[in-house]
Image 1 (cartoon, one colour):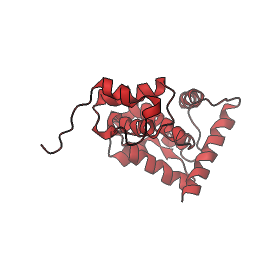
Image 2: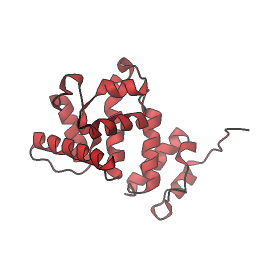
Image 3: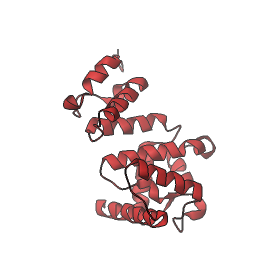
Length: 184
């Protein structure tokens, strides 16, 4: 039967995700059911194995599935290209790149960007969402107070220590631009 993917039990996922066994070839994250993928991610977090390639791949796959029309890879490409041009990106630009209706994805953009930020952080990249702002601020890179609070909360969750919030934002934006420039 073409396209058939055998089910993998949660106990097998837990066994495969033990820290000492986790390698990129252990699990094909694309073939996992949603519940199995979530269990794999949770197990890696519980075991502090978030530096493993399979965890990073699972994060990306989970983001692809839960984007509500926002495409993880397309958002990454838009942000990378904009950063290489040293320009800021609007939320709507991300939605448009995915072919998503902004009214449908408006409330899920925060979760989508968090997935992208966590993925980037695990790869050793800067906080990519630093250059994503509302359309009124694409010229300046400023963030609305509520958006800045969410951005800073995400940064703290990743372990950043922040004393000057605006300076931290500008530093992260600079890091994203430098990162993209080095990738060109």
